[in-house]
Amino acid sequence: MTITPQDLRRAFPGDFTFGVATAAFQIEGAAKADGRKPSIWDAFSKMPGRVFGRHDGDVACDHYNRLEEDLDLIQSLGVEAYRFSIAWPRIVPEGTGRVNEEGLDFYDRLVDGCKARGIKTFATLYHWDLPLALMGDGGWTARSTAYAFQRYARTVMARLGDRLDAVATFNEPWCSVWLSHLMGVHAPGEKNMDAALHALHYTMLAHGLGVEAIRAEAPNMPAGLVFNPMVTMAGSDSEADKAAEERAFQFHNGVFFEPVFKGSYPEAFMTALGDRMPEIEDGDMEIISQKLDWWGMNYYTPMRVADDRSEGAEFPAIKSAPFVSQTVTDIGWEVYAPALKHGIEELYRRYDLPEMYITENGACYNMGPNDDGVIDDQPRIDYLAAHLKATAELIKGGYPIRGYFAWSLMDNFEWAEGYRMRFGIVHVDYETQVRTVKKSGEWFKALATAPSKADDMAA
Image 1 (tube, one colour):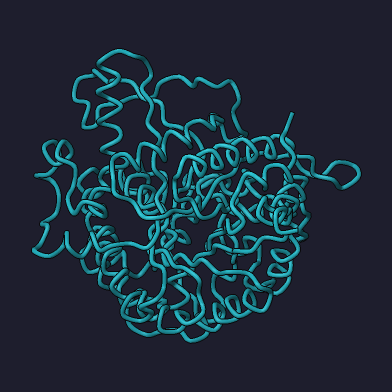
Image 2 (tube, rainbow, N blue to C red):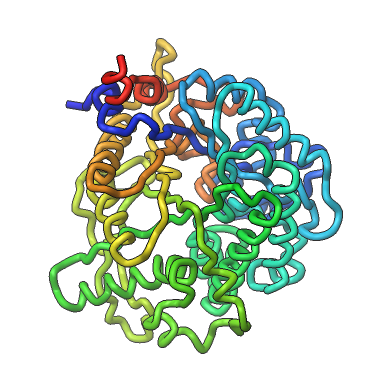
């Protein structure tokens, strides 16, 4: 039996923030409008075999042209916060050089529209849409890109920093480093460890330079970084698999958390791959490890690993282990809410972390409208309820979790999966662009608008 949203809300503090999340490339469309130039994802999605069905972001959810309607939609869901990303190619279309005022104007309208509706704004400066022109210098494998990002960050914060409620430098560096430069699944589609290692350090440097830019332009702005930590779990109790799990943790999490929160890269990682890293210049680690006000965790599914004994297996030398839960989403990801709790406990055990938000959590279920036009996505409700319950338990245990953002506000361009995978609590008909709130959206609204225990006591 699913816990009622009203009962679930009472498990959270009165000041806990419920929100919805999106990303610019996934919803905005208007790829050539008002001075925007291509990003690496525009190019990548046009290449055969990269994105399902050669789907692209040219139109997406047409959010750029439907901004007011979509902000009304967010307001109608009763949430108090909206997490979105800003498209670098709209602001500095070539990555460096000319600033595009029309791009800044769009985000002015977005932020002001949210404020007018009483919705808090959590902006992400980079959600994977690197201006394509920067690939001429090597993209994220070039140190110069980190400084281009710093200038872009200053430009955005000079314009919006007086009105945003919080800002993150990057969304999921794991994806823009490993998935994009080592596994080749995301733009630019590299499969090269040396390229990935360069992208790793220059992304982390860009984060630190971005924090400097935020603090220079908006000293009181809560600055953070959004990770997607892999909740690594050993496939068995064997010593080999336990050791593999630790290597997996260092490779998938340690290389991002340790530079930020300890000012170094993990020892085992550096022993294995340090000679292939780019030069770490004097002062780099101090820039990267500036104190953050908050961090975000995006969580969907655990990573179960086993030791990989095959000849030539490169660090971390792991392979996938079988799922434990029989429940999987339509994208094939294991549903296992205890991993969210385990992951957060483990990260706070290892690192001195500030307060946090669950910045993305949700499930891919592709059901559409029935004959009555209703989208009955009960499995998504079950997923959200289980993970919110785990979140409430963590808060009760003293973990400083300040808010939760459902992924996603609406169905959208799901990167390499194109439009065939749907994560939204609002359905989008891509032919007509009609938005329909799903049953999960109604459920989430009931949760967000229900009285908390503090409200009950005050009544």
